[in-house]
Amino acid sequence: MKHRFGADYWKLWAASVTSNFGDGVSTIAYPWLASAITRDGFKLGLVVLATRLPWLLFSLPAGVITDRVNRKHLMVAMDVARFVITIGVAFIVLAKSAALEDPALTSGLAGNQDLLLAVVVLAAFLLGTAEVLRDNTAQTMLPAIVDKELLEKANGRMWGAEMVMNSFAGPPAAGFLIAVSLALPFFIDAGTFAVAAALVFLIGGDLRPVRPEGPRPTFRTQLSEGFGWLWRHPLFRPLALILGILNGVGMMALATYVLFVQEILGLEATAFGLLMTAGAVGGVLGSVGASKVVEAIGKGPALFTTLIGGGATLLVTGLTSSPIVVWIMFLVSSYLAVVWNVITVSLRQRVIPDELLGRVNSVYRFFGWGMMSIGALLGGGLVSVFQPFSGREWALRLPFLVAGVIHVATFVYAWPRLNSKRIAETEATVDAGA
Image (cartoon, rainbow, N blue to C red; front, side, top):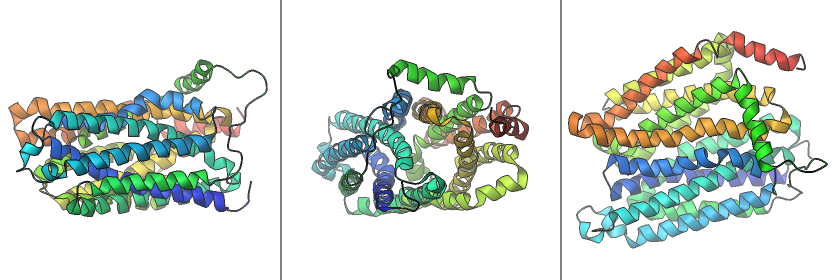
């Protein structure tokens, strides 16, 4: 254990930054590829569903798995798996690039659209599964290579760099790469996973989890402990449920976002990538200003502001046709999301017992991230079901409008459960040694 950042930390930092650049590229490349295969909103929603479904299926066991195996080896294995999957997709896209890049050449895809879409859906599901395991492992590995008193600073540097790569550098790069060749961003994405795997492999030390004396509890027992602790808690259960609702409706809006960008905003791939930079700008501003917001109005009002403000940005997005307005709304929503995360993550780290933190966090992610898969399915379904009645334009706007209304309505459930008094009472139990 070192009292300053050592070489192992910077290897993990570089691996995360590199793979997050690839993730940023894929956020544009995969939906753009899917939209080149099909214009059906429901089918596009299936691609987003496949990416998020693993969070619903595997978040709970992932927390236990990371407490049972060598964490470095698991991270390397997941990055290698992501490399193999992505390089396979890259070669498939390369083989079909002529038909995919020129809608006039439909004969190149005749009879193969559904098969090609099925390959993309399968790849998205496998990549999402690997991401669940890798991300859970990375969060638990950092304390083994950084002194405890430096964890906050280490996490801050890691998060800031990841945000810039994932939302600021990766998406615009993907837009420019797609303009050159639709297959190129997938080759770049695969390369980032290979580099990340090599960097993590070079991290030294014993990164196996500490095993308590005596017989190890069964997998089911450990899983039940984490789930039971969260479900019985008067603050974290509503927090997890509300986060699930917010992420679910957010993904409902984003399921057909690529079609909204193309058909309503009239943007090409490069402009789409630039549009996504708003997330990074809002995130960076939020990371700087979140603590000041909390100090100014308190934790409860700050959480309520994210509920009302986030819903408003979705409603405005659904009603506008201006890329500039959408960029601003994306920036504001990202800012508010960081305010929410700063408050809720700090609460979890402060209140949840260390021996349960990994498992409780995985349960929290089960609700918070798992609902994204359901939201993605609903978003694509809304467009397909309502298009015959409302027309194409309003069908593409509808997911944003419905998500905005639900977002604001969640405030009614949150009001008696997430106020400053309830939060202060929870923190007081820790201060009192309860």
